[in-house]
Image (tube, rainbow, N blue to C red):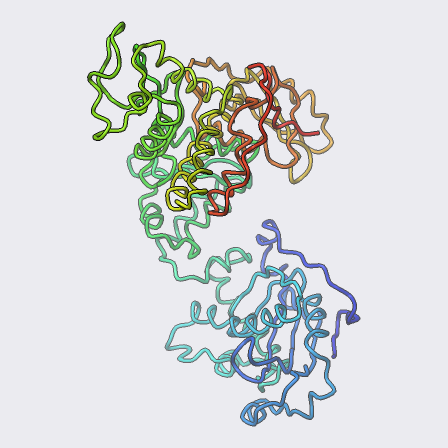
Length: 598
């Protein structure tokens, strides 16, 4: 193996790989390091055929920084037709190193560079196959293909063929390709420089612009990239606006300029987005402290503007709730507006109806819809058992006193005071399984999981929305801390303390500046379920710490949280685990604490 310009790695050294950072991708082309590679192989099928030679040249700003060339023992004989093309014989590679020695050295040679090849899918395909075969990590290189670049830059009249030999003649390169790896890599270096000279006249001066230039994008779409020129390299929310200044689309980004600029390149292949870009006349943005704030602002803007090109989360407060009616014999009803005794929200009405039917059966609530005046009995107006199975009629509940345990049990289930209905479902499930009625057991298992998961979600969000205030912090990726002040399930304030800045004064200022939140008596205190869910996930994420809270952040002791593992197994279709351990009765005020991190 011959490497110039860089030291050769001993075979026992395992190189460490780095992916180019976003800020490095904006480096001017003259300051970008390229490694141009060429391979010779025993055939054209990666994974089946093998590499016989690697040649690579490292360049930056037109200057050669180093070269690497080595034959590789493919572990098999080289076919005669390959020998005729390359001149590499089996005898030449007998004493050459195997690919497991060569590949780590090449990857170290190319580390941190942009990988370039003529017909890059061929070369990278063989290199990736070799990495997989030798259990060698493959870095996420930025890869350029000079074949694609040539087709993008040159006309058919100028270059009827983009073979390396044809382009070498066109650009009068200093080293002619010979079907040997290093010679072909050197020829590709000159071809790359000639093509970069061409695109420089079209305003392509950085690696990002070169990558964006490669796909075939209309000039109108590309010209609109100037709409993103005022955006900062910061997290936030962006809004595409149309001819009448209407909001067409809302999105979030950790780097606003980079994300928005992608809409005007070939990396955006969605037809709806191309249509949206064609209508766009300007782009607004809201710079945010961190990704959590951006996510919350996106949800609020989606609710405010309902943009036509956003498919998800357009109506965050529109959902279906299961609520207990207010009458002498309360029953479950599926409604849009929640009451204090409600479970939800559900995305579809059909799902809510199925869960309500299950809850009615195991809480023993009537399903007949006739309104029963106070002082009257349930039963005379209830459909016969054979026509419609009303749980209250099956149990023979006629008077208000007989019936009252059912509504009370439903309320206790919602608040996590009593999980008896879930245990009844599990007992019934065990009975069906014991009777070998496996299809019925599977249906009940799925219904039980639906009920438990709906309860767990609402109880988890209700635990957060019940808090008057909670202040939390998470380490920022670039150092320092990200802060969120949450009041009744809403993000009231957010900020960041950069590395080296004492965090507590920042926290105190954020609390003082936080917006006032007035809760209502709904289960989630009027908070958007999607916003509360986003905040709950952030609080539960690794590294998050609670700075202060107005009360304990906790779920109810007999809530559905203890059923989470059982639900996961049920959803996976595996055999249900034994029911959660039975617990001694506990006062309503006792809860399981959640979300506390040291």
